[in-house]
Length: 219
Image (cartoon, rainbow, N blue to C red; front, side, top):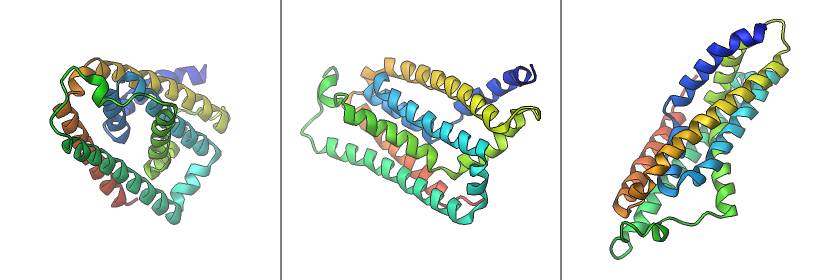
């Protein structure tokens, strides 16, 4: 019963965290807007896989070691920053390639501007989400500060953290997939060539800015 008493504030905290803007929200919005709801699914699952791994690391005490290590912090920070900048430049390259095409496709020619889903594309999106989450040193600090607040002293730390993390993953997955479904409903509008280029350009700029911000982050 002591753990159940902590669940309501835990759920509220998770919902507030999920709704906060950041790389995760940008990746999900971009995938859902430009490629549809199905394309956002592997991105969401990759992000949540990374989150769960960080939660397990926090429960095992590994996240605290990473947070305490200056070398680990710098390495994770730079890897995360470089990867975000890479994703942003990748989006800009898509805009540049589309501008070299002679004229715009018809607004209803969705298939001509939306690449079909493939197994390789699924795993690429999953990997991007996982790397974005795992290569963020802020996640280590967040996990070691967040979960202990909701673990009763009478409960085992690792097992309880794993359980709470599973609850968080379920909540965030439902939230993000619902968001992707809402955005995906307007996908035909987002996938118009001119609008698509603007979304790619803006999301690319935001990802590059987030990467540069992460690169200059200090403890």
